[in-house]
Image (tube, rainbow, N blue to C red):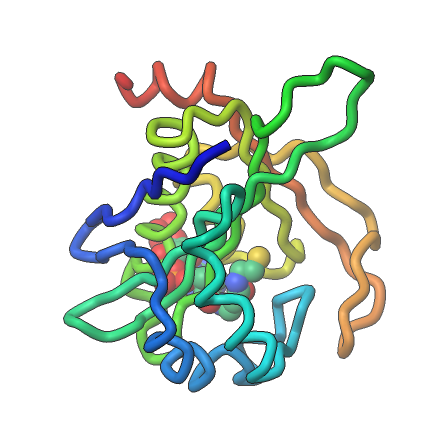
Length: 189
Ligand SMILES: CC(C)(COP(=O)(O)OP(=O)(O)OC[C@H]1O[C@@H](n2cnc3c(N)ncnc32)[C@H](O)[C@@H]1OP(=O)(O)O)[C@@H](O)C(=O)NCCC(=O)NCCS
C-alpha cells in the first residue's frame, strides 16, 4: 500500500491537515490536561510518545491522523487509523479504520469536534475508499457520541460496564460504526 494523504480538507472553517514535527509542542500543551484525559482510554501520553508518534504519521501507510487548525492555531486532533478486524483466510486487507478526536479545552463547544469527525469519515470513505469505520467512547461522554451520530455513525453496541474508568470504575461503553455502502449514498457521494 502506498500513502496518499486525504489532507488538507476544510470543514466548517476547521482546517484538517497533516501533522508536522513543529506541532508537537502545541499538542503537548493540551493532550494531557485532566479534562482531556478524563474520557480517553489512553489518559496520558509522555512527551517522548508524542514526539515519536506525530512526526511519524506522514510516513505511515495506515495512519492518516491529522491536526485540526483554526485561525492558524492547533485546536484539536483527529485520529484515523486503518486496522482490520478479524476474519477467515482470504479476508481483504486495509478496509477498516478506527477514528477518534480531541479538541483543545477553550476551543470546545464550537463545533470543532463535529467538524473533525465529519472530515475524518469523509476522508475514510471518499479519499481512502475504506469499507467500515468504527469508534468507541464511554457512554457518559455525551459530546463524543453526539459527534459520532452527527458524522453518520450508528451505535452498534452498548457494552454494559465493559469499560474501566480510573475514577468511576466499571462503566458502560458504546461502539459505533459506519459502512461506506450506507454513508456514501446518504451524502450523495
Ligand atoms: C468530545 C470532544 C471532542 C467534543 O468536542 P467539541 O468541539 O466540544 O464538540 P462540538 O462542539 O462539535 O459538540 C458536539 C456535540 O456535543 C454536544 N455537547 C457538548 N458538550 C456537551 C455536554 N457537556 N453535554 C451534552 N452534550 C454536549 C454539543 O451540543 C454537540 O451536539 P449538538 O451539535 O447536537 O448540539 C471534546 O469535548 C474533547 O476533546 N473531549 C476530551 C477528549 C475526548 O473525550 N475525546 C473523545 C474520546 S471518545
